[in-house]
Amino acid sequence: MLKELTKEVHELLIKSRYKISFAESCTGGLLQKLITDNSGSSSYYEGGIVAYSDRVKKDLLSVPQNILSANGAVSAECALAMVMGIKRLTQADLCISITGIAGPTGGSKKKPVGTVWFGFDFAGEINIESECFSGKREEVRAQAAIYVLEEIKKYLTRG
Image (cartoon, rainbow, N blue to C red; front, side, top):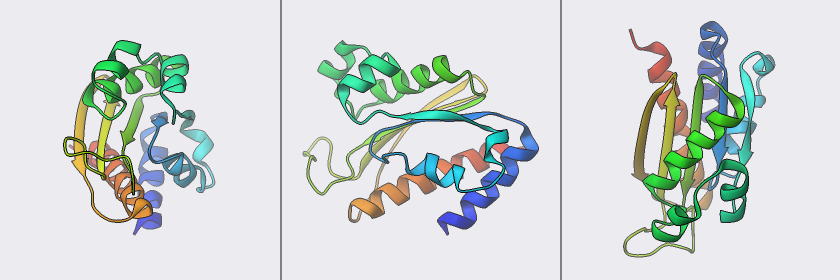
């Protein structure tokens, strides 16, 4: 399913002429890998950052320290700062951030394993969303990637 969905998004991105970029944390570059697996992705893929540590989120994506201290890296505020950071760096039309807890450790009652926050800046339309996925680490990461690809597809096919 993941490869088919990625191929659909690939074709839609080529038709749209939009540029895309990612700021990934818990997915560890999975979306960037999926996108660049398709020949021709250089026509729309601007680039991305895998910002796994708080330091890299802060230094490269300009996530304020007070957000990381008060809300944590797995938060709406961090997802918003990350998507704004990748937008600033790449100027892409479609910018996406992903930050969460893939597990199996790192969860809490307030933020269980599987909690993922997404930031979407689609041509200036900003949305911050959260999902809680279940399963093992690889499954959480795959579900997060599918979620992002579905959101891109919805945006590119809406009338």
